[in-house]
Image (cartoon, rainbow over all chains, first blue to last red; front, side, top):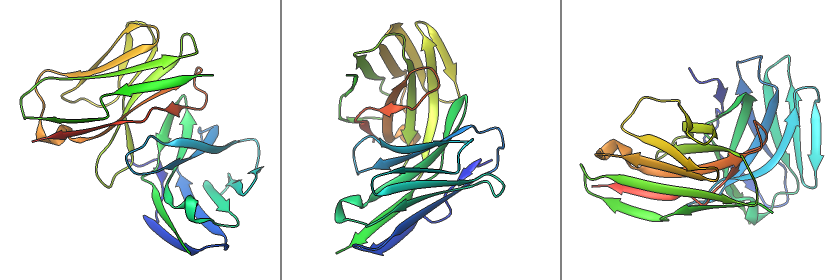
Length: 109
Length: 111
């Protein structure tokens, strides 16, 4: 049972445009959500997080939106840069973290 | 600041051989420690986590085991590797159930 889903395995975006990565979850007990970025052959690095009591958190070019009624999480990157090309994992916490399967983002110069 | 180390970075082992992957954390005390595996084309699967020395919780029944002999040391082991054990193994730490921070990972290939 996949409690955290990233339905788009890949996404290509033109440099300078907005990248929107989506994540859906099923467990209403999740209280904290995170996004990680992963380059090949490296460990994931923490990007941004949001508590379930908020609906938006912004950090520079990265903004995470949470829609609790829809059980939907999204990460916006604007403007997108070539260095943003990586696999992005969303994760949700209910004591432990449950990860999605990841979305490979490719920024086209 | 905290640092997490994993070694080796890459490992090629024959089927049936033993395995020992080590993870150490610096700059913190009594962290929660985790082992994850990322199989090819798949997400991160939690294998084990530990909230203290000698305390190990297993998430998925499998051919692997974990131990925490010291506060900041976490070891992943197997007595006999299977082909299906190939993957990218990641160690992570956190303060309680807070944000997890990952190590650089070990690429294991079982032939």
